[in-house]
Image (cartoon, rainbow, N blue to C red; front, top):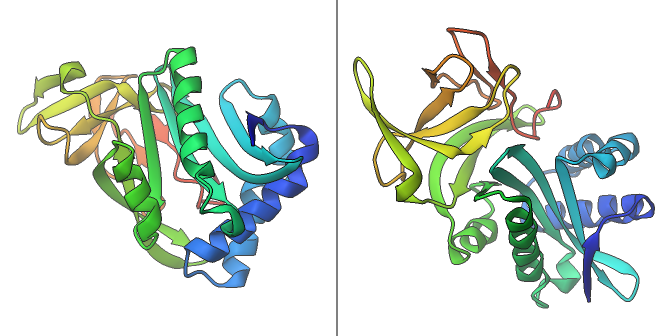
Length: 240
């Protein structure tokens, strides 16, 4: 088995693996899964992502066949977000998921990123357990809509108390992780916790105007009321 960067000719295989993986892991109907795969792994979109320096698609190749892949975006200078780790159900007993996860960590280290974050739907028990086994901590929850149905999504990240800054605002004390960021329309947002241990997500610190933004809509979009900086929603959102 070889772990390598995805190639343009892998696009049909990526779509097939994603479809089979979603069918095996989520209680979603066929229409919702087809719609999601068509949106995230559209041929043109994949073409652009394979050319982007801020996107990473790693595949597990077994004898020339793509059997799994990791879908990662760099959402800040020091943050990589593992959106999906899809493994063909027929190969899930062969440790490909762990090897891809380790390869993602290696790529983050090589780039200088210090934080790995992941999101997974609450109904995917195996996915949640996978993140926990690999040292990530659940720090927050979001509600996302899939085919007009709301689902709870959990946020996992690697915590490091040494890099968290305590900040006293007018009415609350928050703890800002400046290395754990998400893209915004004007500047990045730093993940902000309600406790020094980083176990409860409070909101996001807008790096454009140094203001806390903690109002989120159903699709995970955050907007800073002070300057208008906006964090887009999750990949379940067709407008992502």
